[in-house]
Amino acid sequence: MVRITKDNSITDERTNKFYFSSLINKVSGYLDKVASNELLKELKTFTGNCEVLYNTMDVWTRDYMPIQLTDDVFLSYTYKPDYLEDEPETITNWQVHDVHTQKQLNKDVRWDFKVVQMPLILDDGNVVKAVVDGKPCIIMCEKRLMENNVNFEDFDNWWHRWWSENFDGTEMEYVMLPWDGYEDNPIGHADDMVRYIDEGRVLMTNYLDYDKAYKDYHGGLMKERLEEVGFEVEVLSYLDKFDYEHDELFRMMLDRTWSYINYCRWVIGYWYLHWAIQIS
Image (cartoon, rainbow, N blue to C red; front, side):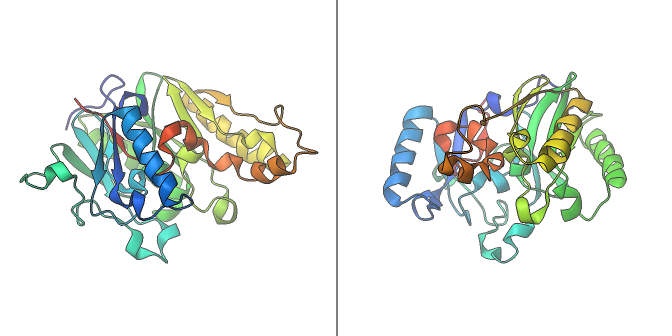
């Protein structure tokens, strides 16, 4: 398979099409039907280039659809998140369930891109594609080590060997962000924590805003790991914009503000539109 470089890798800012689940009007999460319809209408106006995916088991399309690596190469994986163990009926296997668009119904080929299967339990919400020090890079959360029952040393050796063998000597950097455990962050998605800006620069969520343990350990360690690879880290902060002592609503929100930096991905897209691909 083609060697992946900083020049041919597809990071989020290079994508220009949305695919979203047909369940958007049936399973609305915290949105009612009116809000869902308005979201859909605005999305079509905003992008002018989007399609509906059918045969999905839930609306979180970004999490289970394959990850775009280059113009025509995508990475598939085992989507088996532990946070859905009690809801197996919501787990989508895009190949087994024949996920497709309306345009593909009368075609022999559902998707016209190449797929490489990675032998790893993963989900796309835990993959932040980036470029650093002239190389492609994937930012993940160390919860992946636990879900795959592997230690860091073994994973490190396997990771570099797998990319080199499957993609013509590709040097794929990676960062493992620290995980704060099931109680505080059961999902463990990297795209909740870090947003790629441009080569060598990322935006980190506001871990450093609150709680001494996060400032001195978790948030500090996250920033340190990103900087070790070569990223310049910009950090969100809200405490200088609100009156923490007297603003009760802000105090309530602050407990979970760190979890949702992925709102920066597509402001209008909310959370349903979690799969965007490049159109050549």
